[in-house]
Length: 156
Ligand code: FES
Image (cartoon, rainbow, N blue to C red; front, top):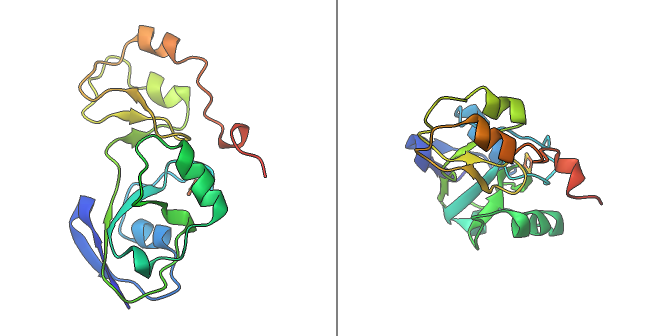
């Protein structure tokens, strides 16, 4: 049973072999949106495995394809919904900095507010609005053609 350290919330938990990594995050109240419903086609469950990649199931081809489209993904990136714990070595998990939004309405609700975290696209993880910016109607107009539907990007 490996020890999983969730760095964003500074918490360490024991997780049994064969448990899905996303379930571990959700049980610890990590804010994971799951925009595609665990299908491996969005950015919202993207995490970094800083230590213990050998304790995770291998990368699937779908996961590899999705990660290739995610801004900020690198060689230690995984989609937590696609990861199963398979080994006993300790694991350190880091979540990307930022807040994923699911729709234009989510952003519109923030008009007039200054973001204290980057606002991220739920499919490709790109930064829609930089940290520290005040969200304006002009920004919303520029983003109005943004597509938030994960199924519009991938088809299998
Ligand atoms: S929830 Fe969409 S890829 Fe994991």
